[in-house]
Length: 113
Image 1 (cartoon, rainbow, N blue to C red):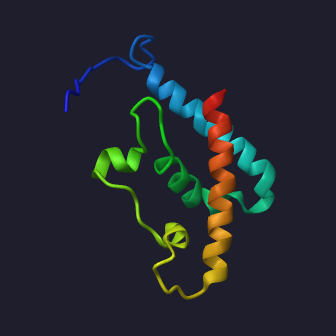
Image 2: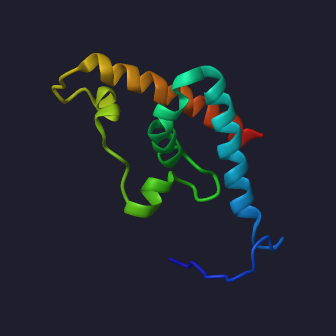
């Protein structure tokens, strides 16, 4: 795959950039989601993680989930796009889909900063 392992000390300026950028993106995304979701932001952390792991990242040219598993993630949240599944509790899935889309917008804004 062409990956190279680089060991470094904590806060080393030449190898800490990628971690720093990821933490900064998460910070912006969390801040904007907390402002919009108010008191329920902590119950949506799993959706934030889902949105982050299934969003396109220009540094790797794909979503982190796809890079790790070699395929796109398939969950009930994504099934409404395909339309080939019979789902129970469609309202809750639609609500989750709306929240994931909102979080993805916040993530895109955070990545563009």
